[in-house]
Amino acid sequence: MADIPIAAPVECTDGPCGRSTKVIVNAVNRRVTHVVVEDESLPEYATRLVPAAFVADATSQRIQLSCARADVARMGPFVVSDFIPESPYGAAYATGAAWTSQYVVDNTAYDEVREENVPAGELALYSGMHVEARDGRVGVLDELVLDPSSGVITNVLMRKGHLWGTRAIAVPVDQIDFVDGNTVYLKIDKSSVGALPTVKVKRE
Image (cartoon, rainbow, N blue to C red; front, side, top):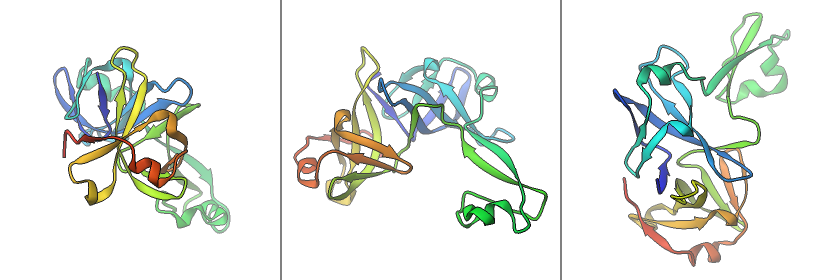
């Protein structure tokens, strides 16, 4: 496979099984380890952490898995719940966490905190992540480009708003400084980003 779409339909051997929402990457060897698949037909924890070994094929339009829908349903959830004891004012309120949208706090003895199950030493990348050059924001992440022989990520495709139309900038992965939360930080500045080659976007 030459690329991995981060937000695309996913097909199992017996039919559609949702969409990819994120890709999990080993921070050291730059290999894709898992694809996060969201299937709203599942009763709870609709996101599943699917090992990359089950990806039979991937194009810019879809991801094909080598397993059935029931197999995906039995895989571990990507979003998990943790229950923390409530303080007199609510544990999440005491830490300030309740003021963010990812926490839902009620008036029970325990508060539920939902977290992403990202394996240790790995990074979760998703379409729409902000991309920051050394001197400011330059666009959003679109998809990953892999070396077809080794499976190692060589480039990330980045869209730079409406100015680029149906084209994207190919950023070499060695120009990524680090990834933090919702943002990919580059080692280069805006002018260097502008000098990088553009490629035609294969999907809307």
